[in-house]
Length: 355
Figure 1 (cartoon, rainbow, N blue to C red):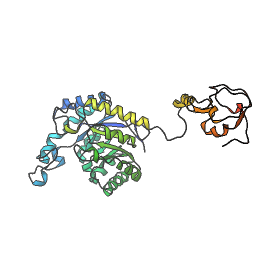
Figure 2 (tube, helix red, strand yellow):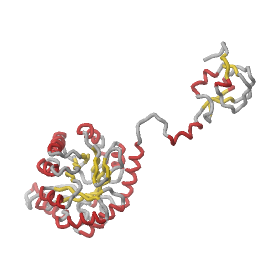
Figure 3 (tube, rainbow, N blue to C red):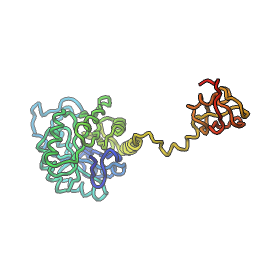
Figure 4 (cartoon, rainbow, N blue to C red):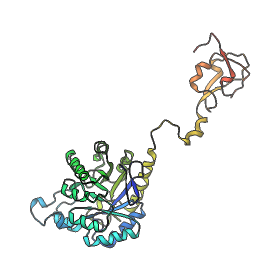
């Protein structure tokens, strides 16, 4: 199931792939967009993702009630006006991809219609992402899948049937490198609603790589997701939340992104493998386990009693499980206090001894 994006592996046996989502946090400035990309790279992100749409490719300019946002972070916005403010202009894309190549940064995008896909193909995007709200747009998924490039898909709000249809559509067009993002489409999302165990169902049912598109505040959900097997984490990213923008409230800043990269990497490394074999790092500590020691000076021929031996540290004597077998044994030689018990010091057990 693992796959590569620009020579970086993505899969459960590799470090988590961390995607900094720029979204609308350029705040209408190409310069800020480029500064954000550089900051994300310097913070350790594996890639930066942008969004490719215009207000006109997303909706129509209408004042009808269903085109107005009621409640939530963007309360009172008309859909058209929100997308016009938040869009990453198409005319920026060539410069953004050029700059990404200059600083050796992986850049890809979420296209929202076929014209965006055509533009991104000309710019040789290495991958695509389907946003949660677009997972029901099967014609768009089909169009993207024909590129045969790696495809991330967010599953926020999606039913099992809708996810199945999206996966089937992509695979029918020859797209096999798919990662499903578990996602709660709430901005920000309450951590108690993260429902991370859903990722495991996605992996079991669809047999693809899984990840978390995380809208919670902080790193807790992302770290937990990696511990459950997430191969990729996506978080919104901004240079500064103080410089307000449409998505700034639930976006992380450079120092927080650095912490995310470090903490999820450590979480991934801590998983290791499931095995009862003793790790090499523990070998030196075996001598500090408990074992059986003589705690008295005793003569050859003595029948060992309870008070003659103890189960203590260090671990150079017989294992504690042999304690009852040692009781009642006859000493073959003199022993001293602090001497580890070994079979070589013991003769036959007394017939009257207890077990």
